[in-house]
Image 1: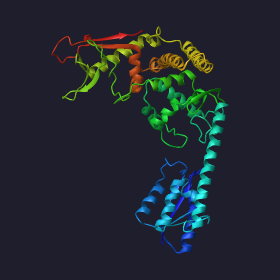
Image 2 (image 1 turned 45 degrees about the vertical axis):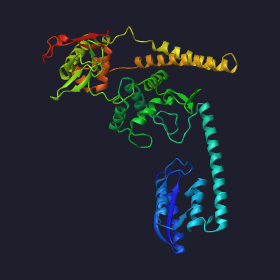
Image 3 (image 1 turned 60 degrees about the vertical axis):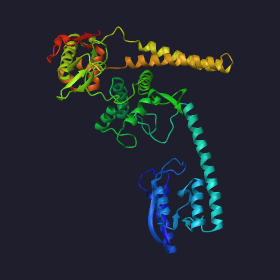
Image 4 (image 1 turned 180 degrees about the vertical axis):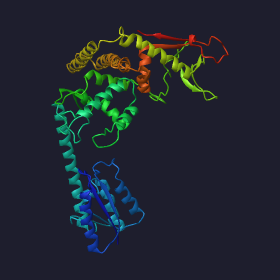
Length: 453
């Protein structure tokens, strides 16, 4: 008999694989006692078998090798190590009955080479499945209760907090605050991930950051001190401290939901791409390399205007730095800045109205159509408020420039997205048609830089 061994552990808390090694030792003893020839050991460490959607590499290789005829005996510590899916178990029982597969367990509870063993296996699999489903129900109910009470829950320590899931972890908490600040200032998520990795800050699992990990932080209401269950806020005051104000989190969520999508989104490489405007049609200029490999900013619609990018970048940069030196923080337009406190108050009123609408519908004062229409208007207004909060939270780096001894060095130290944020906050750049048609000369007078303040 050619035998294979399969070992599995659902959760390896310490990552030392001691559990699967113990299983392997017991299974090897079975193989030796029966005089079988061991052809391989298949292992899935810290992998659950409860959900059939979870891929188990060791198990999949085991199945493929059995189909290929590499073994005709299978030893596992317990049937629930092999599978917790009754449907999968039936496949192995069929193999035992029709093709002579000898499947035994190291704990001696099942031997599919016998009728009694197969009966016991089916009974145990059904009981095990029901036990797991009941355990899952209890865990979900407990999680819901803890969320409704504003208590932290979950196996893993949340980034930004210590093991008790309540006390902020100083370095990580500061990293969370910086993530929100930089994101609202225009830094894309993939860049934020790189910044965390460069600073040597890892996830709570000890892994490098990815764009998806940053996105989950920015969308998580926990950091605003809000409890949620299955994506819905519970309305209960959380028992852990917020790391950012609620309006900052809401501005982040709003920006995420209303971001422009499409090829190349958030991958702008140049200072004035889509920032500088065509003086004829108003379209945002796009960067384009000509045949001579010289980069230009060009009108994307009908090519009304085109200018060498390096010349235009330098002209605008010189203007911006000179303007900031003359005016300091007063360079930023203040008249259109929204009142954040007023916006937050409006958002709270709208959320209260949302709850009230549900009550009125339950009491029969509103029809389903009326409720739907009212909610649509309410959500539209909430979206507008979140957009304004996002705009008011964008701090494009003016403070670092106004306080710098060497403003040009401070400008160069800013990443591209912050420099673009400064330009967009302070000026409009309008490129007029060339005053000398046919000439390649860069004429500064053809570019209008209009302060917004």
